[in-house]
Image 1 (spheres, rainbow, N blue to C red):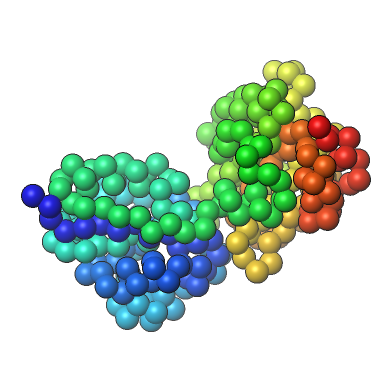
Image 2: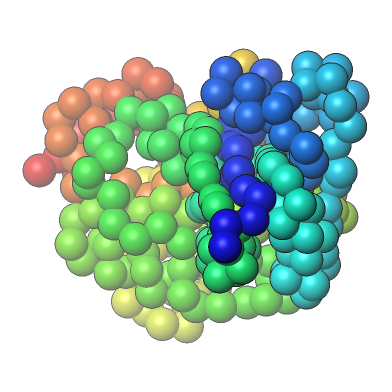
Length: 267
């Protein structure tokens, strides 16, 4: 028996105006509207403004409610009517929401998706690099959750000549964000131990801050320079370019202030 339905709606990247018209329509016609803000950070999101847009209140759900409690508050509502879960970026980039969708389907609750702008496509576009030349992406965790995985992923991608997108860890509930400098320090620390020749202070990288906002910062340069560069406010991402098409090299110079020496990385 099919019960109610659960619609996952992407909010985009910066503020409540990033939602699509379709997403706004879904929220307006929902019986219950939930919002999670822990999987990503939207610098200028106004809950009050969004509630005025849709003409109803929004229930903010925590990581504990969606993960530890398996989203029961959302699933219970979706079993009684139409529930919308608003998610920063694109709704199923976070694995948390895949698990929630699977559980809804198991319970006979219909699910639908309304996609939104994703940090993955936004960062790629801002850098001017070709999407099809990216390898695995990876999250760089806070130091207390230290892992060599980001370094190993970078090594694998670099060996294939591919670009690497690094999403820098966030704890939105505590207003904490891993910086570009901290991420680079992590890579250099692992390089000092592993010595695979993957990254050093002369390696080209691209730092991105506030992708999707009216004033993003995009800066390409050597690691030693980016470590002291002021990227402004969060959230942050990091890209390590692989081999470059001539157009990618020119884009990095034009759009990210890369040194002309990036042309040496061309295929």
